[in-house]
Image (cartoon, rainbow, N blue to C red; front, side, top):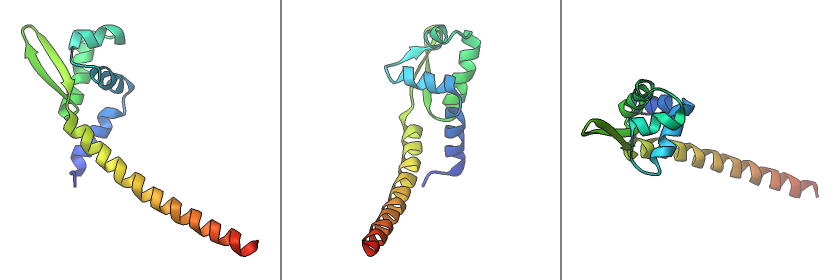
Length: 111
């Protein structure tokens, strides 16, 4: 099971729409901080702060390439978040299936 603080950082980072947009863009392939900043309409410094939050959460990996910083998806933490979500999705599906079975049974009794 993934430690709570790892998930807390991931979900906290994902709570911001700009950071979700960054992940969506990086899903298309690597990009520099400047390439991420331009379409978002924010400064390179502002974008670097968002990237740092994502990097600290393990959602993005960066590497210095010449004079730029290249960003790419860090899939491990995304996998952790998806595993957590999937667990609760299965849990609720089982509960809803049970509720559906109950109502079907009740409907059969009243027919």
